[in-house]
Image 1 (spheres, rainbow, N blue to C red):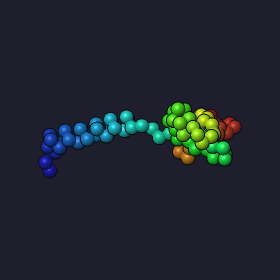
Image 2 (tube, rainbow, N blue to C red):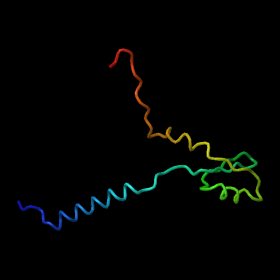
Image 3 (cartoon, rainbow, N blue to C red):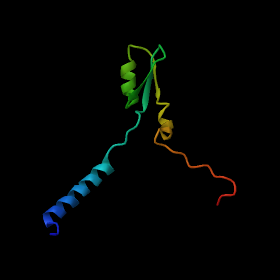
Image 4 (cartoon, helix red, strand yellow):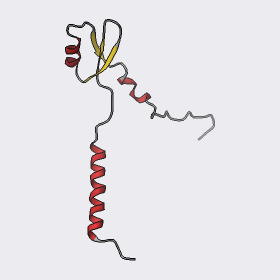
Length: 90
């Protein structure tokens, strides 16, 4: 069996480095910061800034508030709380 060529090894290392770099710089998914509360009590979240929310509200009524769901991001399905400690366990 022949050892892998230098070109193949360098290509594999380069691909691995590119993957790690892209994974480290990928933006995290999150809810946007502002929500519009319409006069009919419908909430529309997804505005990146308060000004964007106010622009959407202008002429339609309603108000803009910080996203109330953003603070609960640690309650996502992927979140797992620490296991409860039992008495006598060390």
